[in-house]
Image 1 (cartoon, one colour):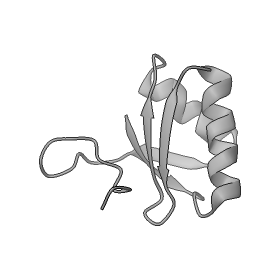
Image 2 (image 1 turned 120 degrees about the vertical axis):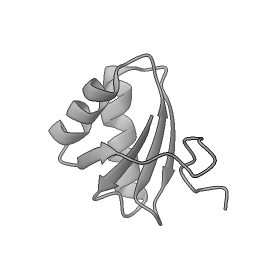
Image 3 (image 1 turned 45 degrees about the vertical axis):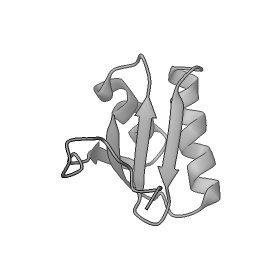
Image 4 (image 1 turned 180 degrees about the vertical axis):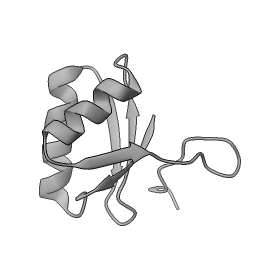
Length: 78
């Protein structure tokens, strides 16, 4: 699942986001791209539940559009 997250601006916010997601699913894999404010989450939790957890932690999150090649690239590799 790929999210655009308002407030994902530094390492501290990335840690807060990771804490919120891991409280929901301790086994979730998270990749944060601070420059783009984008979050990639591999989790057994639903997109809605993760979005709710992020909002409860004070971050506005919305589903991000897929990468042009059809993948859920967060952009941290480029």
